[in-house]
Image (cartoon, rainbow, N blue to C red; front, side):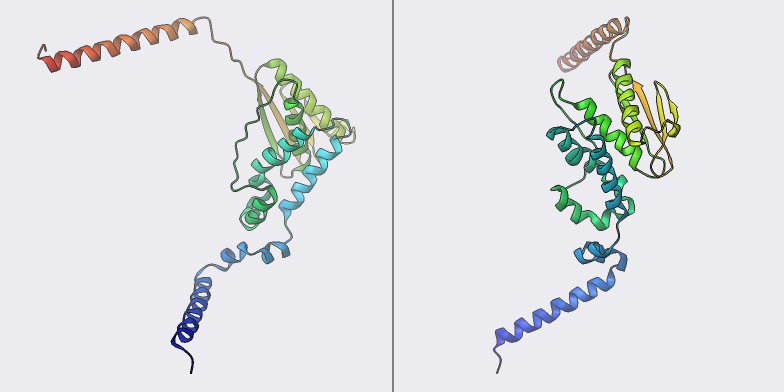
Length: 238
C-alpha cells in the first residue's frame, strides 16, 4: 500500500502538469513558444543575416582601415547591441534570450557613450560602423551625425564617402549625392542609403555672457526678497 507521502507527491505532480498545460492553452500560441530554444533554432532569421552582412562589410574595410581591438569592441559590444532592434525588427522578441547569451548582456540600451583619449580611433571607428550600416542594411537606411564643428563634420563625411567607395567596388555611379552635408549611395540591396552631417557650434554669443550674468543677479535678488518677506511675516513686520 502506497504511503501518504507518495500519494501526496503524485497528486502534486499531476496538479502541476495540469496547471502548466492549462496555462499554455490560455496564452496565445504566438507568445509562449517564442521563448523556447527549439523554436529559435528552427526559424530562418532575417536579423541574423543582417548582422552577418554588417560584419562582412566591416571586415572588408579592414583591408584599408585595420581596426584595433578596442574599435572591434566598440562595434560589437556597443554599436551593434544598440542597433539590435533595427537589425531584428519583429524577430527581436523571439531571439531575445539567444541574443542576451551571445552578447553577454541583460538588456538592450539604445544609447551608447564611448570615452577614449585623443588619437584613439573614435572618429575612424564611428565612420567604419556608419559606412557598413549604410551599405549593408535594406529599406533605405538613413543616419545623422552631429559633430563638434565644421572641420570635424567634413572630416567624418569624407571618411564615410571613401569607405562607401571601397565597399561599392570603386563604382562612382552608385553615388547620387556627395557634398559637405549629404552622402547618398545605392547600397548592396539597390536601395538609396543617406548619410547627413551636421556641424554643431559650442561657442556662446557675445551678448550671451551678459545675459547669463543678468539672470544670475535677478535670481539672487529674488531669493533675498523672498527670504526677507518670510522673516518679516514670521516676526509680524508685515
